Amino acid sequence: MIGLGISAGTNIPLVEHVQVVALYDPNSGRIKHLHMVTTLSGATPSTQDEAIAEAKTIACRHNLTIDDLAIALSNDAEHGRRPHCIDPSTKTFVPLRNE
Image (cartoon, rainbow, N blue to C red):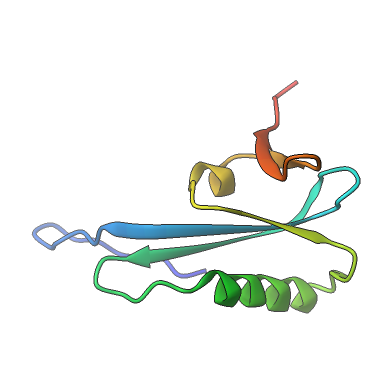
């Protein structure tokens, strides 16, 4: 994980694009791996294919078998910040409720 340090008097970089990649069980909708790519102003955004490839590579490094997982994409940063599952019929992110 890379953090940004900001000190007084510096320009704060603006987020231009967010790509959320969820690798999930297509039957249950349970997200098995979540990957977020944040592009700051002035940088070249990753393509969807690059974000998906990076998500799969990192998932495999964590010993996750990805062969049977489906992919859901979003540009909403909240989908990467809060717990969600995927509705298998619509492939949309659904917030999980705290119970």
